[in-house]
Amino acid sequence: GESVGLHLPTLSVQEGDNSIINCAYSNSASDYFIWYKQESGKGPQFIIDIRSNMDKRQGQRVTVLLNKTVKHLSLQIAATQPGDSAVYFCAVVVSGGYQKVTFGIGTKLQVIP
Amino acid sequence: GAVVSQHPSRVICKSGTSVKIECRSLDFQATTMFWYRQFPKQSLMLMATSNEGSKATYEQGVEKDKFLINHASLTLSTLTVTSAHPEDSSFYICSARDVSAGRGGYEQYFGPGTRLTVT
Image 1 (tube, rainbow over the protein chains, first blue to last red):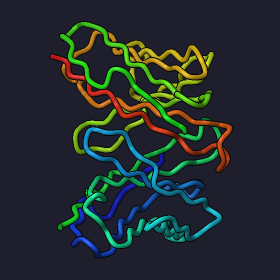
Image 2: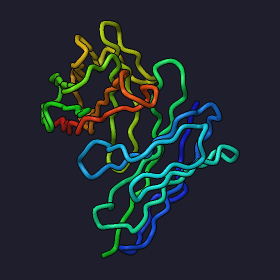
Image 3: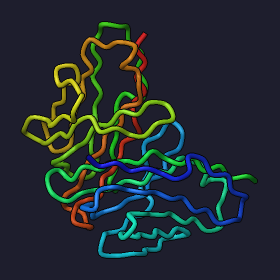
Image 4: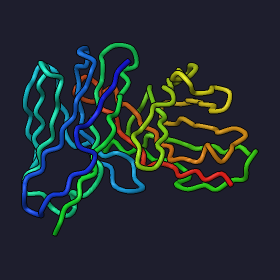
């Protein structure tokens, strides 16, 4: 079955620095990738997504990079702010069927003021 | 737009009782809703996929007689935890997929979650 994991369970970053959160996935049939942010006691919040036919996508202060060759996904946050402190999950979707979203383990981002 | 609500946000119940959690898509129609549970400091685990007007599809290891799911309309799905026990205490989160949205309808919108505590 699908497994999605993260290289780093926690990440501490100085305010203003850039953050990079990594994710590895195992199913080569995964064709849609999403990053979510979850604050304590709340549901996941969509950050950015990318399809398998792309290798980079940029949003506001965030960039997602996809390397299908090594099945690796990363989320880059520029100029990290205290409000970015949260748990970040990568998630993958395999097309077909109900298009279930499979979540990775999660990385806790701690921003040091 | 694309707001999903859950009710209640928190519930405490006694062991052996049943609890119903509602998930509503407020400004879009959701033919498919998903139910997840999340233990502290862990990831979201998919429990079941709920389709309007049909039976839910449960993930392996999830007891369908214990976690009853009903998707009676295009904007409402309910999860009933029957004969709850302390080990059912968890954070339950629903999501809804707007198939009319862009990105081929992959994106899911998540509810705020329901914290269930069984005493």
